[in-house]
Length: 223
Image (tube, rainbow, N blue to C red):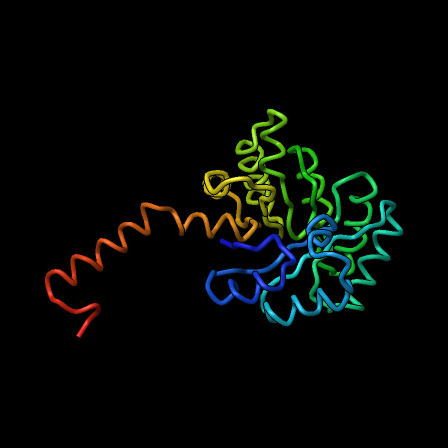
């Protein structure tokens, strides 16, 4: 099981990576846009410094043709580090690029997956991760959990070296559903995990425990 942060916010990463059992970070142009007009390579180098070499870092390509996608992936590995996973949209040109990159031993994360067929093609093309968009699929009345189950079974049945990494979440219930459906990984905005641990009932229980201890033993903590 892997939990990744879907963010490029340095302050959040500095604060929360030491707290949460995070396996890596995913980014895309929309996420980076939220950080303002930063120096791209300086920014992602800082992300790598924060998360360290053992966690995975997934960065999206911008080109839309196979040759350009391959060039983008090479550029990311050269200018960031050799462990970067190239996030590639699962289009026809994307599949062609995934095949070429996987043959070179380069990590690929197949993104923008909305169907079983897309996912199966990405897995067959050698993707390391395949990322179905949970909330966006649900919004289109697509059975997201059935898609994740099918892809997970396909991977297991064929012994593919790929993991389903569900993405695009709006609430923690969707995250739990993705894992229950068989996803090996999820990438989530930090705020969703924080919301799960900051529910009023949880905080009230903690306060009650402290009050009951103080009332019984007259000290604020263990002696």
